[in-house]
Image 1 (cartoon, rainbow, N blue to C red):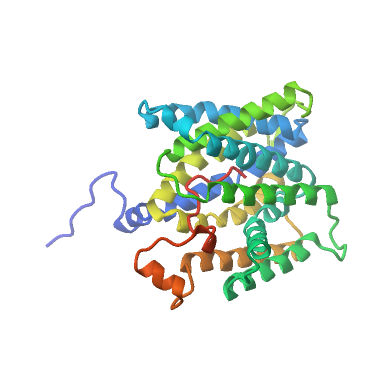
Image 2 (image 1 turned 90 degrees about the vertical axis):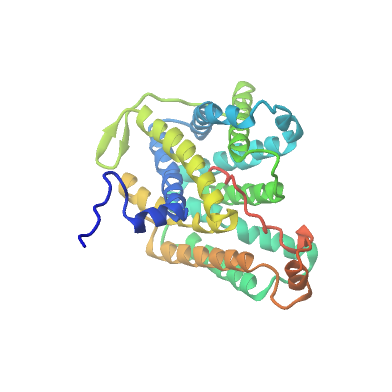
Length: 350
């Protein structure tokens, strides 16, 4: 019997399965999120200030995401009022402060190093909880934390083989603290607010904060119409700005939410670690910059350490323990036992 012809326009079963699983969407989300540092640095090198780049990004993305966010509310505007604290803190810390600090780091460091510093957030969370609860983390988390800290030493290149900007390191670590704070703020699962509404609302809050800071003179704003360089091309200023808004924010958010729903927020956040790799590759292709060999080794250790911490989160409470028995019987565990038990459906914009 002759093999059945594939219907025109239909994808092979293996490819459909890959996309349907959410892994393809999650990787796409990481790839476009990873573009943000390269697009931002192109603007910064043409005369834009970090504050101006962040403000333009947030304002444009907020307006675009409002289009699907308003129908998602279905007229239930009270959801915004009921969740104003979460939206406000998400916009202030997870969006405005986190981005501003990251862009300030990108202005002084390579994109890869700046993002690696920001990705120390899970380690900061582990250390904070360890100090607050005085309970030592489990072996896998403890090992991952030590591995990431060792990687940090290499990324900073304390031997001096690669010149490092201390102020840039400060901004990168500040971004990591904001990212850690964001995870604490939104760790509690919230089914009363659609993720796209939280994303759009947070972007509006972040944009409003940035415009207010500019109006009061607290934040320098410098825009430029000078052409920018992306890889071998000289482009108008609006090209990297459009990429920053449409690709690295809007598409990244929407695909990230789709991936979280398809894979579950924990697994999706785990796959999002590939953003670091994409960011380094994009910076190499578009900006011609690459961290030094010792920094790349440190980056591998940091990512490896975060992977171990995330793996420990996915495992849940220690098997066989009292907490594990409680979970198996379907009884809710105290949030303090697993502070990142629910990774967020809406990641902060890096």
